[in-house]
Length: 554
Image (cartoon, rainbow, N blue to C red):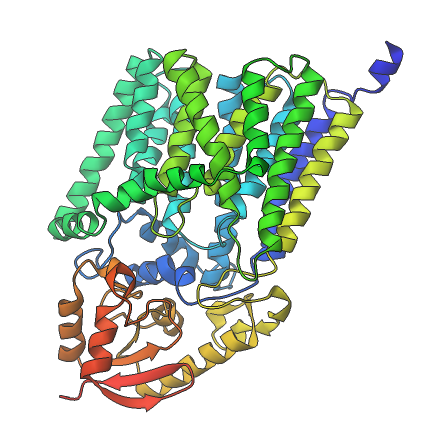
């Protein structure tokens, strides 16, 4: 008995270290990852729109944007001058890391109320695991999916966790849930899902007050659109681009394809989880060990993905396989067995699934927390004591994940070409002060240097096609056509209007040669506007990275 007690940690020792890790994680990630890499498509996508708002342009009337506007408004804060420092791109990356930590920290409150965790050490380390899996499937940048997750989880936490049905926090939570729906169309279901959860759990007053708050937010948004004379354009732009087939392929078809490619390597974590549900591992210390094995196995699967990748890698497939299993298990336990805790986990899976409905990032890994917390609940909910060996296991698995993901991120995100972090030693702030703290490679430095020369030569009445999304934010100029990424998918059949505006206003066009939206590509990922300029305009100049076109009729 004495030997066993000596092998146990004091109750608060492990939790203190876990809390410290959670506090330091976002700061460490800012230091290790935020400065490195710059590319010319996704990185400045939201920031380009936010800059347009700051220049006085009106959403949907002046700005062509095919999603709800919450992200665009939110990231105007990235342009705030903080203590004399103006660094919007770097600030957007800092916010990214703290957003992901914030919505994972909210799971602590949710877990304590609905999952009845007895052991804070196990819970806090589980949240740390959630963070490192979430943060490594997406480049650090302002993005509507990240904002949707941020608003969804915080809103769910505020709306469902307060003890009193009349708490003012519930109204704030309802507003956050509506902000999620106003970030991206795939999050429209989240406020509805939260209300259904409340009704399932006989929280009718809470559901009523939440619904009233949501209605007030929706009404205020409609009034805003009416006041800016942009309601019709909003409805047209946000409803006409994605087809039902696109939604089916992203939301259902993609998972069927992943399920068909199941391998024995990816089945171990789901098997352990299902075994726990069947009580095949009744002893608590066995369950803790099995949880660590499951997480470590997922880390190894991510490492395997990184080893065979020559560029930026997205290791989401392994998590998506686990998501399918944990999702159906929560569906069965929550709906058929009517267990409240699994209904909450099912709602978290709905958030994860909503985040995965995308043109380019069809994976649940950006909110892999839903699957990880489901495994944690099944395997750790009854844990009261943590032995020194298991405590060491938590630390070992955590740092193994940090090391694997650090090595895996040797190729920072770039849609146009493969890059290497070791080559990113050029200070981009030397070209534009608003790029301070950003490190790029020699190629990126040359691209932005050439762009600066062209802007100085041709003046402010310019735009870049098909995409160079930070162009107007860097030069502090007004975008003459209301869109920075002039890909067919992002302009909703407005190519003729944009071409007419370019011609009418005498805009000089820089065509960026290395953009991923190739003019010759058909469908949503091509650029009809760029094709029209190349085929119908006069080439004024040819440079290494850009061609310059002017309307031959001017």
